[in-house]
Structures are given as structure tokens and as C-alpha cells.
Image (tube, rainbow, N blue to C red):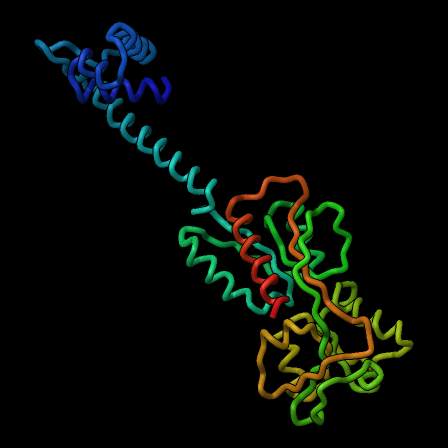
Length: 297
């Protein structure tokens, strides 16, 4: 049996006449009678029996009618849900974000939720190289990452380029608007990331190009802990501007690093030549619009 035959059977049971059921279904009587006989033959039992002018439903027919209603209802619900997912009105947004994520991301997600209240979310936070692998494995559809990375497998949308800041405990460092790497060189430094990962490499490369050797005393990939360590006077740290905007700490002072090419580029990636859900497409549009407006400010 198929879903079409089940709909035929529901009409026969509810109309109690082949002629009335055929009229409801916009069919002629002979094909509908043939479909009823085919179902009875397949199941090996009578489903209806004539009772005067009307058809009565056998116990087997009643059992089939119950399941037919359930199955046709599930089919209708499936159609509705698939259409809503396809339009981006429901479904799941799977998103990867870098450890140093977009400062306005919570607000963006709230804005997206207000527009698409039936969307659910799966958000993975990790280092950029790990996020690339999550996208390759289709665990997340899109990810916000830090450059530079090898991205031959991905479609890439550049979001922003931002400067780095040197942060220290407020009570330890006199106020400066700007600072150079040479001015940081001899101060104890906590690197925000661990060896082999993007930000760690970028900071060390900047010192190397400037022919300077930083006084590294610690590495820490947890930003909240890093800020606590800086605030406790353990050492200073070099972080992207996003961290300054995202974690507004009264007990930490930030100076913009100048006279260097040290900067952080952020991009949104998805797997090249693969289908993106409408939810991911809609969020990508919102994200790129946000950064376009941000750059205009």
C-alpha cells in the first residue's frame, strides 16, 4: 500500500459509499473499487462490507483506518516542516565560532532569533583550525574563523580586519593611547592561544619580523582566565580588538599596538560546492550586513 491508497480508504470509510468517496476524490467509481480490492488482496482480509445502501467497516478495516489517519497526518506534517526548513523558517543553524569571536555575536543571534523564532542552534567554539575540520566533517555548516589559514576546500567571505592591543592591569601600566612591540618586548607577556595555533603564530611572527624577542611567561587559550591573569598583574597580553570590545573590564588597560603589520582578519567559511541550508544562508546575509555597516561607522 502507498499513501495514495490510504487516502482513498479514509474517504471510503468516512463517506460510507464508493460513489460518494469517488466524488470527494474526483475519481470515477471503477478505479476506486479496484484500489479497495487491491488493498484487501494485499492484506488478505475484508476491510469493508456492504450493509444495505452503505458500507460497514470490519474490525480489520477499523484498525487500518486508525493507522491511515496517523500516517496521512504525519505525511502532511512532514511536508509542512520540509517546506519551512527549505524556506529557513525552521530547522537548525549549526555555527562554529573562533575563541576570539565576534563582539556583537550575541546581539546578532538575538536579532536572527527574532526574525526566525522556530530556528534552533548548535554552536561550537574552538580554534580556527579545528573549526575548519568541523566544517569539513559537516558537523557545522558555517564557521567564523581567524586568518591566515589554508582554505582551498572552502568558500570564504571576508568579514573584517582589526588591530591588536596590548592589555595590562590598570594599576600596573601608566595610560598610553598607543604602544609598539619594542615597548612591550621586556615586559612579561601571556600569549592568548597555544603553540601551533593562529593567534600564537601571528604574535610571534610580528616580533620576529621586528627582530625582537618577547618575554613570554605563559600561554592561555581561555580568554576569561587570560583577563583574570592580566588583571592580577601576572603579565600583559596581546589580543585582537574584538576581545577589548567583548570583555569590558574596568581593571584592565588597553593600548593599541602601532608600527607593525600585526592585525587579525576574520572570515566566514563554508564547504565549497556543498548545499547550505536556508537558515545558514539567512544568517550569512545578516552577518555580512552587520560587518558592512560596522566598517561604514
